[in-house]
Image (cartoon, rainbow, N blue to C red; front, side, top):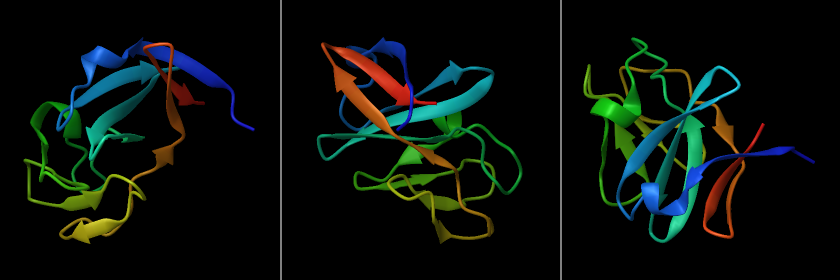
Length: 104
């Protein structure tokens, strides 16, 4: 079972938004889509651009990297659209008492 780390308030990630948090030196993005929270590496596997600051959620479960258009499924990390070929790492995430917690 993962040990969970509190990273911020749930209100910091409204529906349709994504925000990055530092978790033990790793940049982890948290997105809220379709009422759920999803956590994944904030760094695109193609050219290492930040997804939270420049990426865009498509209204469903995909985030597009602003650098070259790679798209990833925020639920699984899988590549949805190249040029990236490697998936993002994903993490357990939960909301407890208004706080976002990520499994480290």
